[in-house]
Each structure stands twice: as C-alpha cells, then as structure tokens.
Image (cartoon, rainbow, N blue to C red; front, top):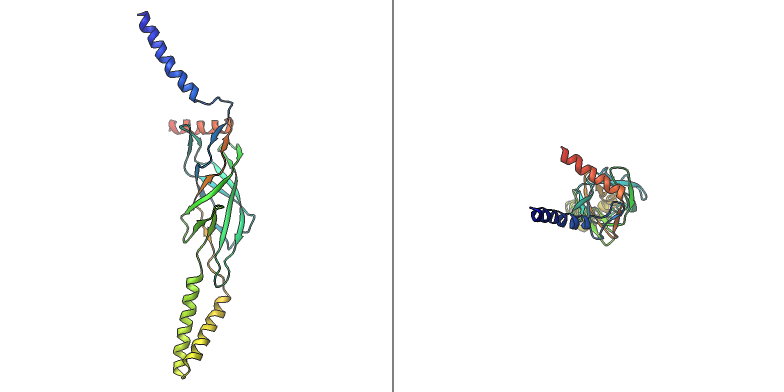
Length: 226
C-alpha cells in the first residue's frame, strides 16, 4: 500500500514539474516572435479622397494570436497607426496609394505596448494590392479607362470627319478633345472600406507584459464560462 501511495505521489509530481517549467513566471514578459502575422480589420473607411498624410487610424485584431500554446493577443485588441504616405491619383496615369504604419497595440484592459510590423496583404477592397517591403497599398490604375476614352473619342472624330471628307482632321480633333476632357479629371481614388482585412507581420519581437497577459487569460475564462 505504501509503495503504491508513493508511486502515485511520484507520478503526480512528475506531471506537475514539467508543466510548471514550461510556464513563464507571472512577473516575466512573454515574447511574440518576429514573423508572427496579425490579422486585423479596418474600423473606419480610409481613402485618398478624404484622408491626409499623418491621419491616425485604428485596426481591430480579428483572430487571436497564440504563443507557447496560450492566447496572448485576444480578439478585440486594437492597433494604432498613422498614414505615413499618401499619394492621390493623378491625371491620365495616376494611381492612388497609401503606406499604413502601425505604432502600438492596445489590449482589452487598456494596457499598451509599442510594436513594429509591416503590412503584407489586404483583402475586401476592389482592385487593391500591397507592394514592397514597406507595405505600400496601391489602388486601381486609371490608365486602361483613359486609353479607352481617348480611343473612343478618336473613333468618333474619324467618323465625323468622314462625313465632311476629312477623316484625319476628325480623328485628331476627337483625340484632342477627349484628352483635354480627361486631363480635367483625376483617376480613381484608393479606398479601404471599414471591415477591410489587413494582415501585418511583426518585424521585431513583441514583448507582452504580465498585466496585458492577464487580460487575455480573463477573456479566455469568460469565454469558457459562456
């Protein structure tokens, strides 16, 4: 009986000590490694038509982030950032573009931490793509519609010129008139509607403080209770 009791105690302790060893001390920060992807959503529409360089924006974490098998960045955490670069679409060949840099993360309990991350991809906005290592967001190109309009104007001018026996003069007049009209208008603006998915990748490890981590644990407990 005594041997069995001692064996049971030994097996229990054998299971406890490794688990304890894998758990960071309560007073130590937990590190989320560089390269981790943060899935976020835009909380309000960003557009080259209305926004300006330097404007602040907020993103909401849409998928929890795990570290060492535990949730360390819960859904509902937010990223704060600024529009570091803004280029409105030009005339004839303009493309609207924005560079959206994030500066810090705020956890549900209000705790904040600085972070460094680069934009990887964007989903949910029409004709938008992310290019370059700095995560530049580019909007739709205005060149194809411009060329189509000028081509249509040239064709129309040619037909009108044929009526009066001067097709080449008509074509030149049509092309010139369409080009001048198009020069008065800018290309399509880049627009990221609220709810657009933006995926950032950490470029440096993110240190999660014990206080911020406790908020995540509390959220998991509330979720389990429901």
